[in-house]
Length: 314
Ligand SMILES: NC(=O)c1ccc[n+]([C@@H]2O[C@H](COP(=O)([O-])OP(=O)(O)OC[C@H]3O[C@@H](n4cnc5c(N)ncnc54)[C@H](O)[C@@H]3O)[C@@H](O)[C@H]2O)c1
Figure 1 (cartoon, rainbow, N blue to C red):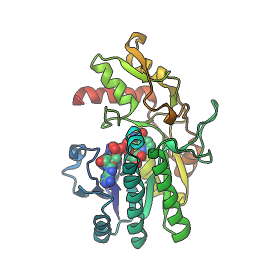
Figure 2: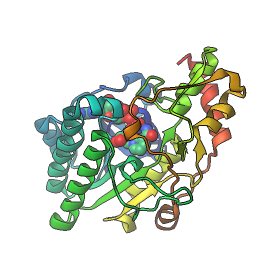
Figure 3: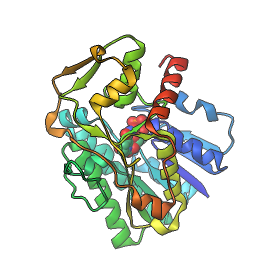
Figure 4: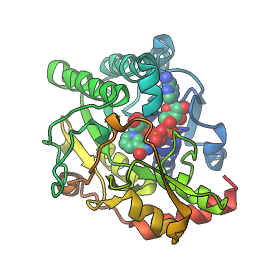
């Protein structure tokens, strides 16, 4: 049983690889390093179960085909994607090429070998929710950026391979994920950015009024969610949310991290039209179907991440 992890050198991908290697699975990584570094996988360089790191592009159909031919993967955990919302608003084509065409290439090869595809979607697919509603998988979809639109398109294409071609597919929608190895630039997550600014004695900048909320998932819990879905046969054909089930406003998050209101500043939002004001996950389906439970709560996750950023001078 060989597992393919696309985007496996990236932030969440390297934790998925770690989780699989700890379970002594054989893993191949395909990543073009457009938003990652080879060093993210350095911890596993002596692990013989990491069979290969292929630095190439999922848009390259021939490469994808030859890889599937070589390894006849049992499962493909498909994380490779263009993830930057602002960039997708500026250059929608890149999101379309990477997230739609790239996913199509994976699906086409997967169907030759009946490879199970675990497609990592996103909570950004969802429409705005009322203030007291946790978002379940039946909540309406309304992609507010080409990033979200391309991810929803990838999900729909994957489900068409499930319904029309009997390909084993599962769609996962993780909520905002944070932890070590996440970038601290605009493509990174808010928690990493805030901690790093705190450590540099810079002000924490909040876009808009800061009342927008996020359900923040620690990255090892996210990887566990993804690997549990890869291993579970009951979830084929399903869409499943992953989040802790509790949200926090960006104002409260900033205060929790820096502990001093005078070090927080509100600035003009870059793309208010693509902001989702309230995101809290209804995770009951994942708990029931996958027997998955997040185990790291926010304060603990922030402490772990801060320690890691200090030690790694990220
Ligand atoms: N970070 C989050 O909060 C979050 C939340 C929900 C869903 N997701 C999804 O999880 C997945 C991983 O996200 P991440 O946060 O780890 O981002 P990331 O950018 O660190 O990971 C994506 C990886 O894919 C690679 N990649 C991009 N385009 C590629 C291509 N054409 N060919 C090969 N490799 C390519 C990048 O180099 C990177 O290593 C994405 O599909 C993203 O949409 C992320």
